Image (tube, rainbow, N blue to C red; front, side, top):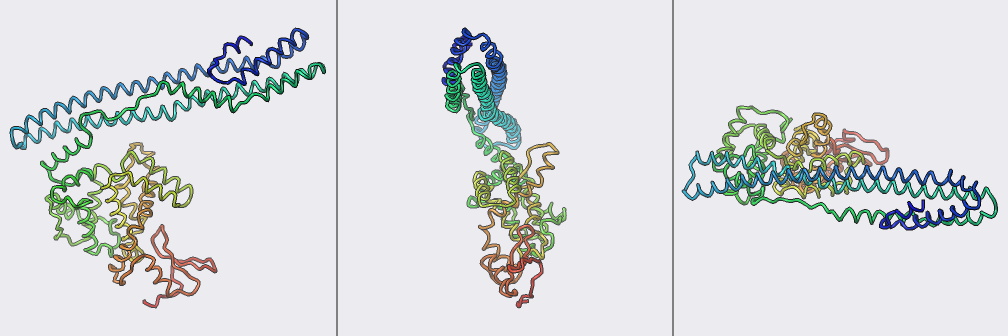
Length: 521
């Protein structure tokens, strides 16, 4: 046993355990020479646990070493695949750039040349998107290794060391008990052994062990990886949008950034796509917020096709539209046809987890609201601007003065726009079915978080639409209702349905019907 203590790695810094073990073994040797029976008892009660934890520690160390090799190999494979994808993508970019430069020096490009360049550019974009995917996968492998796998290995090492220290402490106590059973002459030694056990500072030894092990692991730091092509993805996408603008000139089927790039030449001052503002205005102009099922009911496919053709021809007058359902239907068609929804796919899991937390806490607290606003602050500015415009549409259609006509509550409107706000990148049917509810919940939370920005505007618009005069805020509308109520009753707005309900503070009663008819009626 002394030899084993001497063979321990001194760099692990677990000195109190090592010194205590050595002290115990020296006393055991002395007593064995004076009392054979005591030595036999020690052999039976103290040594086996010590032997056992050396065996267990060796087995676990071998397992951890094998896991480390497996994780390292997986990361090296991912890095190799990334390097190959980078080389292929860069080669395609260089070849495409050289051809484009040579052709453009000859003068204006013809339609056939543009078509050929667009085809070659699509090959470049496909390769670059594969490189982006590989880059994201490699970074995820690195993050998983640094944040999950390596900490797990260290946790296993910590567990076995804690077991070994606890086993050693218990052995000392058992040893002291054996001493007490033989004679009073051994009581002093027994007291010494208890002192040895109490001298083991497990917390300090473990802190030293973890710090030392972590420092060893950090010596082989995993290098970070980043974009390493001559052109950025944004530059390549901008080139793609320019090609699309030259050949098609449309606003359907791309991303919000594509639409903004196309309209930049003629309307650089707009912060949202012109198609959005034109359609939203047309819905309101044609009395859409006085129509039951606005944004839910379908429009004529013939009318939608004709309107789309005009918009693709850059005609936003919409003078031929007579039904607000056509404008509402075209807005839904344009949004759902976007290549990327408002919230980037990389943020999908984070958004779903937020909804689950709100569901678990049974309230949308200020803390969760600030968390959501911080998340929305990370999406592209045009995406956030479009989301805010949709929030205004939801609030207006579900306003207490309007919802009696539209029958569209905030939840109903959230169901309409949720597919355009948050999209499940997974193709697993179980995941898609399970998360559908949370995608709708997320749309509702966005409305609640951004509602304050539109409160005065929506209240005033709702009053104007319904012919109810003017109001600065929704609280003004509620105040008008309360002014004619029986004393003790208050008017409140139900966040789920959007309807006004009435509550009696004294009796704790609540009801949908007014306790008294308003005088204005």
